[in-house]
Image (cartoon, rainbow over all chains, first blue to last red; front, side):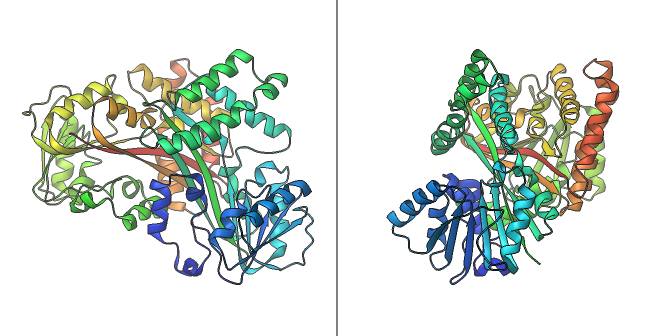
Length: 271
Length: 271
């Protein structure tokens, strides 16, 4: 919950933070608006994918230099096009494997990792690898979701079972959809110091129509719904239960519905 | 998330709020420090029990007049002794049934209800009954927990099953241990306006030893542990699984453990 700009040494700005916590109307605000890096700093974005977060990083830290890497050459190409298309000139792109990056040790002032560890079979090793690239006193920021943090009203057992399919499918590919709650122990095991974990709960009721549409429906439920075939093929659930579960998730977007999900944002320092 | 003092009309104070959200070292701070009522206002605390919350209410609103009621005469006596023993003179006590209170309609400026609705088979009727006592423009503040919001690291199935016993036992007495997530729809159904629900997540890792002891161990786990006999007698779980579950909950208080629980605080206005 610390911003990475000058204010860092003085702690975070509560006005900024409360805006996030209680009035964030978008996920971008909730997760990213308190991350900005000082002018001239060298920032590594490890695992940029197609640049979904890169664009916010570039916007929030206009005078930092961001190096964004991803293991997928095609994703890097999409990200590059996206960022350059938006007119940003403060990002360099490069293909690279997080476990074997083409940089000298102790190269970066700050490292940013968002929605990456959840996909790795060895998240601790990834953190150790990244730590080698960080200067002493430099920070790492890690953001991850936690699907096990999901609950809603009206409660619905089939909906929980459909979500559980996502968790199980991700586990089968070596990932961990519940890694958010684990950031403190992971950063601790990687021997980072001043670890600060800040849960970012997305609380959605009918008074927040933008989040009902943007998060509950079009982000979370759409994601689960997209795993219908693979969940059924994997024998994790039957069609009827899955469809009931999706119906249950949409039911939480009604005028009396509530949906809760928590992301975890951690910052820590290399000592 | 609005304080009930003068600042109310201008919204809440972000500095106060962030202090709650990120630095609260006690539950009292997290739940109550943004509730204070203006001088001269008439406040009803509905369901004061033995005065656990009354003392904080009295301290935070020294110049308001608080009327604290509970259905249990003996609880009221304990609460009265506790508050008077602490030297507060701004609270009156009275035995009374929330569904049939001995007050004229439209008597109170503000109503405060904490950890009460979870025990009632008819929470909506309780809110309607309380609303009758409130002046137009007056506020209601409702705080409830949600046991279904509990998750932790390391995850442990037996621990979830032990928690589920508590939820089931409470359901059998007509209550609802997962009512926190339901505050928005309940207040909405009772036709309150300007409903604002603010989740208060208790996030505990080893960097917060006071919460490890005070919340994870001595509040939450102790509560679940206390239901060992009744859970086993009710046939909800076997001894071995229950004990494993308790061990799993204590395991989350280790140096690499994490524990998450969310309370919900709602404020609303009678129009």
